Image (cartoon, rainbow, N blue to C red):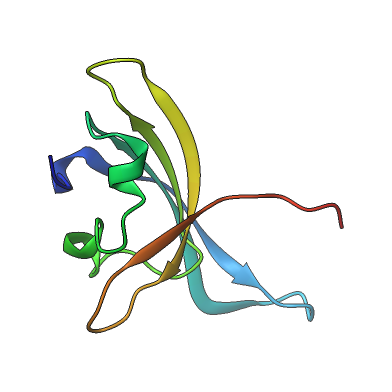
Length: 97
C-alpha cells in the first residue's frame, strides 16, 4: 500500500516554549495515523511525502499499523521535512534527563 492522507489526523497542537517563559511562533503537532501497511513500509523514507505541507520537524505520529493482520502501535517523531527530498521519521525514544 501507500500513504493515505485521509487516515492522518491532527490530535494536538502546542506552541514551543522558551526558557524565558514565553512561546515562540513555532509549534509542534501530534498526529494519529492508521493503516494496513506494515511498520517497515511506514518507516521508509518518503512514506509521508504527500503530507509534507502539514508536517513539521518535531511533530509526533502515533501510528496504528498492520490493521488487516496483527496490529502494531508505534510512536514516531518527524526528523526532516525538506522542501525537496524525503520526509523522514524516527522511532520515538525517551532518555532519562
